Image (cartoon, rainbow, N blue to C red; front, side):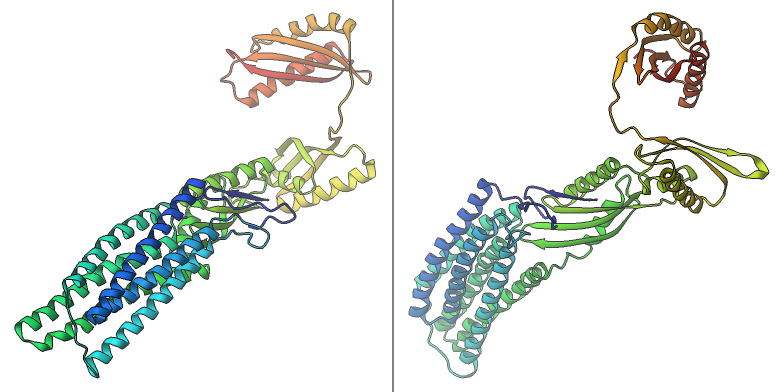
Length: 493
């Protein structure tokens, strides 16, 4: 049995064959609007900062500021990529993208990491040329410091806003964009420090301090490269469907902890954008009904949703014999495999002769005796395999109810039988009341039903013995009765 659950998107966090496509949940309009708004504002901020840094970098000939201008230029490219990737990733699943478009965010983050690495390489190359081959006259003006200070203020505001929204919607694209702006803060501080050393060297007549500018550029590259590698690994893991370390085991533990789950044979996870996809195969008792198995599956889905909010979950359930399964459950399992219902199942221990099984098997009423007997013989053989300790099996074959009978009023019989039936029942010392007694005719057969009030604390086995005694007395008094149904009710209900 396979069930599918798609939860609304949230913090962290398949196919349905031969059925209409079920779209992955679309991000709420407010969420999409907030993500696009913060990404769009970042584009405007990147345009402003890139332009100012480029102008000041050219006028001062500072490699540190020029590297920052290039860094901010790539921030602008990254912000544009982020904006469009968010626009695409929020689209619902379609025929060509059954898992949705969330991985566009991961791909966007991967591209941004590539841009950062290229930036670092260019900055290091230029810094080495200035250190080893030719020097450049740097003019640390007031505007250089002013622009870098302004850049820090803008970067801090954008990094904070992007990080907040990225955490709120678990967006790797916005996280990468926030990383761009946050690294700008530290790199700008390093560049300012380099410019201060250059200015101090000029004022104090120490020309060696001019190397502080290319060295600060290399320091900026080192910081950016380190952070980029970390984000790059995260994005690559998402693109190749690598689950976070230890997460699969933790999800499996949560699944097995659900009541009714015998084991979790397979738990698989994949990550796309801000959502996890979980595929789990669980074992349930083979004697469980379809509704019971569905209830266990739903409980597993709920547990995973609590553990990974926003996850898209597929649960596959398989029937399996439990370690605590007794002989009664094994008998029912063998009968269920052949779509045969079992009732009045009893096992008699006759000492040295062993265990004797007696049961009623319900078969399709359209079968002939030969067909029904062949089916029951097959079921008995499987029961013997499931419970080899049984010395004998005695099956009573009867029809399984499959159509609605026409019942007629039995007015004359009812007037004669009902008062007497109530007397018989209420004469039993443990029956406190007998009511709702009905007498009907079905295919010229007399059907009797009634409700009996008993002590609610009695074991059900004792209640069955009491109703069986009353039924036998009914039949002795009125031999024409074909069927008796006694509904037991607890006193005080």
